[in-house]
Image (tube, rainbow, N blue to C red; front, top):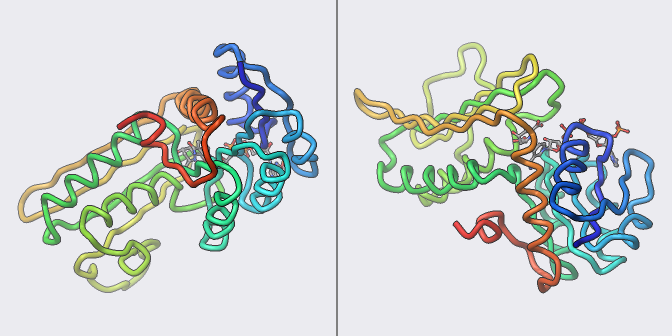
Length: 242
Ligand SMILES: NC(=O)C1=CN([C@@H]2O[C@H](COP(=O)(O)OP(=O)(O)OC[C@H]3O[C@@H](n4cnc5c(N)ncnc54)[C@H](OP(=O)(O)O)[C@@H]3O)[C@@H](O)[C@H]2O)C=CC1
Ligand SMILES: O=C(O)C1=N[C@H](C(=O)O)C[C@H](O)C1
């Protein structure tokens, strides 16, 4: 049994996590939201699970370091400065950051890497995602994770080949670009499709999340796995062994 502390405990993911933590026989050591004391929560926990907001990240990493415990970062909308902070924190404690903790998306990323590598640069890659109307960041963390997998398969950098938010006379598609399109509406939990468009044929690899429990189950698995590890930055693939 592990003592798991939730950052973002009153949010949609916080509620999904609390149910999975109880079902898995772990102890919910507490939860914090905006203005809460993450350091105190960390002192009472074996591991922190963060599904909150990018603005909270630095504070949460400090809390984990202060208590000497691992932290799983599921929050999306992260920028370079956040990834740098994660790299620094990972020198002191185990940290796992991922835009999607589900088994399905973790496997999908492998398939996308493989497809992008085998099909080569003549196949255009476009990533389409749809989420609920409350979502504040775009493209989704998952779309970016899948874009990163495609870029790795291609042997290119995502940052310099990324095209998103096309509008107006935006010009023809740049050769080798990885495109992103984001839809928002209703209560959609998470839909992602990676389209590889070639000459007169198209391959689509996709994932549909039907319930946030899939993210919560993966997050709890990752939290269990992180306890007792050496300091370092880990990936979801390592947790799931795929
Ligand atoms: N990696 C993955 O697999 C998944 C990632 N996510 C990501 O997780 C995050 C949360 O998603 P979701 O639960 O739907 O969002 P919600 O908006 O439902 O919940 C966010 C929670 O975080 C809290 N919060 C906001 N700012 C802070 C802060 N500075 N410190 C502590 N808590 C804070 C909010 O509290 P308050 O209301 O007081 O502001 C709220 O309780 C998003 O970034 C989302 O993209 C979501 C699903 C899966
Ligand atoms: O905000 C959400 O809800 C989700 N966020 C993650 C993302 O940005 O990809 C994961 C999932 O798709 C749900």
